Amino acid sequence: MFIAFANGQNDVSKGIATLVGSGVTGYRRAILWGSVWTGLGGLAGAILGTAMISTFGRGLLSPDVAPTYAAALATILGAASWVTIATRSSLPVSTTHAIVGSLTGVAVLAYGVGGVHWETVAHKLVLPLIAGPFLALAATAAILTGWRPGSRGVRDCACIVSPTLVPITAMSSGGVVRIAITGPQVVVATSAECARERPAAVRVTLDHLHWLTSGATSFARGLNDAPKIVALVIAGSLLSGGAIATSWWFAVVTLAMVTGSLFGGLRVTRVLAEKVTPMDHREGFSANLVTATLVGLAAYKGLPLSTTHVSTGAILGAGVTRKAAIDWKTVRHLLLAWIVTVPAAAVLGMIAYVAVRWIG
Image (cartoon, rainbow, N blue to C red; front, top):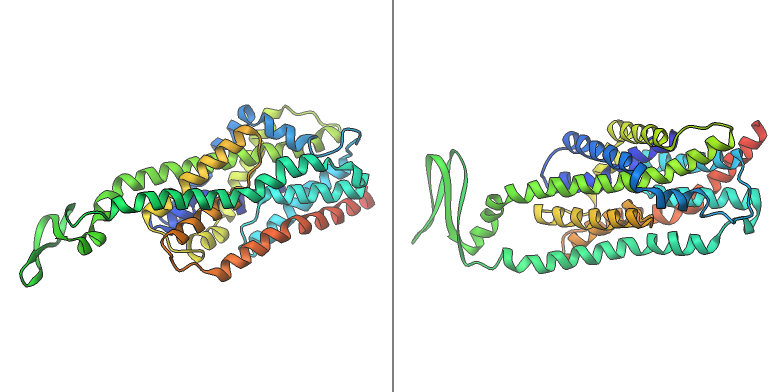
């Protein structure tokens, strides 16, 4: 369950980073929330993830290849090792990319170049993985561009904030006058004041929706990733002479993913929440909505979109739309990690294959 645990450590951040980055909640609650929904999505994969199992079971290998236990084990070890290294380096990488890289590396070493079904790799894996971040960026930018005018299109506004002992703000000929009273805070001001005050009044509903989209993203991630890992584990189990029902494998894989999320999900979450770009509540919600929609649809169709790429693309879309201070140094590090993932996992998979063959 090494790979499932590593996946949980690295990938839980993809559904919850916007909750923390936009100030909706703290890390502890966000990670717990994401872990619960990841678990539900992983279990749902036993029913809804059959297409993904087919893709990652035999779909990437040529029909005439006879898989071996050593190859299956090496594929798992190569992918899990790279994801673990990336997590320790606080780099959000794609488990899907790692699995594909490790699998192709092991297959080429074990069966030759002809052992890989390259057309399937290109059409069902490479193209969706490349298109994912750009599609997410464009969709998030489109939502926020269309949403922005309505949220700033008022000259004057009145806001009622929760009852507490706070000042009440009103406009007078001399400017802003503040009077301390006990009770609800009523704010009447110009559009400049409204730009600061109005979000506080509407944030309650928006934050609830943000929690829901975060849960949906984590659910979609579990639904997307669990079947990939189960496919590899089932292959290794059958080749080693084991025979455990698929539903039980989903339960075991899901438990490992949730455990990894709870005990190792903080490192990568901090990077996506704090170091890519600042987000407000509206932007965080929009980014999560796009991520949940794209990853959920892809999982249902058996297209393994990378939750990492989609969520990062959506967060960048939020930053680009309002020309926020995007940390391009961090973005470059993320892009480099993405580029290196496939060859690095392939090399680690090859090393693992040689080691397994030597030991066995």
